[in-house]
Image 1 (cartoon, rainbow, N blue to C red):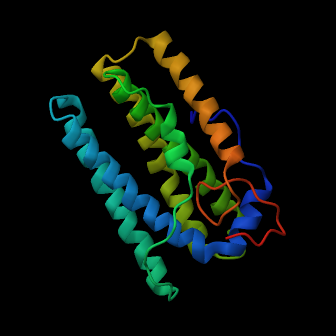
Image 2: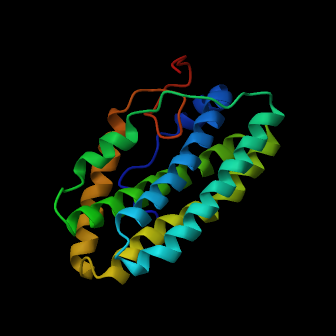
Length: 205
């Protein structure tokens, strides 16, 4: 279960496949950032032993995905380089409360929501690309299980650390899921994995 409060608009995938060079480049940056986020948590919370091995494994898997996407970029002659990010992550993280342990709780839940949205959109891309670009369709279909597992892993870490009881965790997860949905709804229509919805005839990038 991905705990998304709102689904991506159906037209997003058909629009996104028209901008796959930019989407694929952004995807590489997303995998790199996901690995960096996991490592940053390891360094920030060195006293939280239950975080160490799961986040280390998660970071390695994200880096493996980064390398996989880099391979697809190279095959297509798309250079990897800097790309202006969408405001999605920074807007999402505004809900994180500053005091500990609430800061860690909220950060883990925001990470879970990013993974959930990634999983949902990769499934949409896999379906939309099935006829048009089977190779990329296979790429995205093959990543779904990992994204869903990463979402669940972040939530499970909260339970293992005892940061919230079951009711409090469910309530906060619902709040952050609603916030995430509002961030997506208000995000600009860019060719990014976590950008806002776009009409099929849009040319925004």
